[in-house]
Image (cartoon, rainbow, N blue to C red):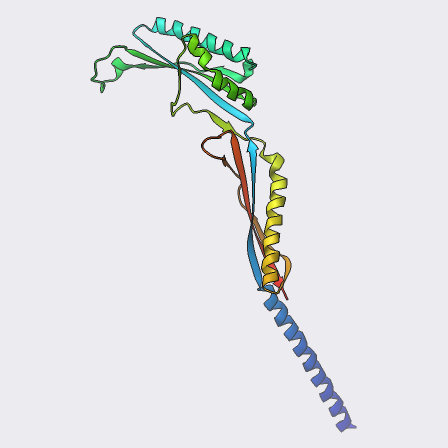
Length: 235
C-alpha cells in the first residue's frame, strides 16, 4: 500500500511540475509580447482664414511748433476715422493712440543740422474680425493721400497682423484625424512585420501651432498638431 501511495504521489508531483512549466512558459511568452511595441507619429494640418486683424495706420508730422503739429494731427485723425467709419467699421473697432513726440534738441548725441525740432508719430489702430473688409480698406487707403494724409508704410514697429482665435472649435476634429493617421501608420507597420496591432501603450499630444501659410498670404493660417502613440504588437 505504501508503495502504491508513493507512486501516486510521485505522479501527482510530476503532473504539477508539467502544468507549472506550461504556465511559466505562457507567462514568459506573454511578458515578451508586452515588450514588443511600435511608436508612430500622427500629423494633421489644416488651413484656415484669419478671423482677427490688427491694422496700425501710422502718420508722422515734423515741425518746430507743437501747437501747429497738434492741430495737424487732430485733423488727420478725424479724416482717418471718418474714412474708416464710412467704409463700415464701428467705433469699438477703432482706437486712437496718444502721439509720440521726439524732441531732437533733447538728443545730445545728434550733431546733425536740425531743420525741424519735433518729430511726432501718430497711430490709429483698427482691430476687427472683419478681415476681408479691412483688407479691402488697406488697398483703398490711397484715398487718404488725396486728402493730404501720408500714411507711413513698412515701419517694422507697426506691422499689420492677422490672427486665428477659434482654435477650440477645430481642436477635436484635428486630434481625431491625427490619431487616425497614427493608427493607419501603425497598422501598416504591423502588417509588414506579420504582426497584429494591440492596445495603446502610451500616447502624447504635441502642442498646436499656428503659422502663416506663406509670406505673401499672412491672412491664411496653417494649424498643425502632431501626436505620438505607442502600440503593443502581437503575433
